[in-house]
Length: 239
Image 1 (cartoon, one colour):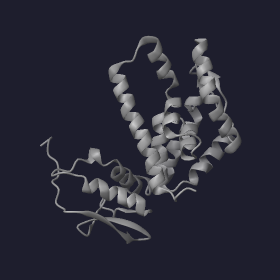
Image 2 (cartoon, one colour):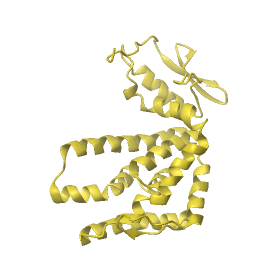
Image 3 (cartoon, one colour):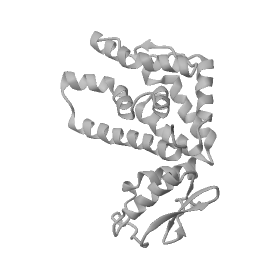
């Protein structure tokens, strides 16, 4: 039973206008989410990407190969009914943002963190009006309440579908600032992911790369980049 997988029962997937957005259909029949809600998404580009995942399935359906579908399902089944809770989870990263906790030694790592992370914090202080405090070590440092409030207000501007992508960008990087920077196109997503891995990169240079850890990191990087792509699919075209 553990190897059971649903069989493909449709010939082709497509999209149709529905409910102010676009529905994904299989041989003309609407697809539903795991919670049995209609799979209706806000943009035709997102719907087309979901339909392409369904079309790409073989004789057996493998949800692991359908990341766009899974993200859309999460928006409908989780974010929409629990918007406040999800936004709160994301906002909480601002209280212990990766960029604010620096190494106490060695000097080369301290310098590398500063070069990578100080510009991002400067962007948050300027563009988002949300300066954050930096500390050395792991002891918690309280952040200015007004900065946290402005960051939370920034999250409120994201749609439910955009919030799904932002959640992954923030959770995978460990940084609310990096997630918002990725959403704002401050730098390419691949570069922002690299900046979130300064500590791991430094340790690998010193002691060599652990193969298992590298495989996990590669999977997380792919998920980070997919989240940024999902954000493009769900957002209005950028100029």
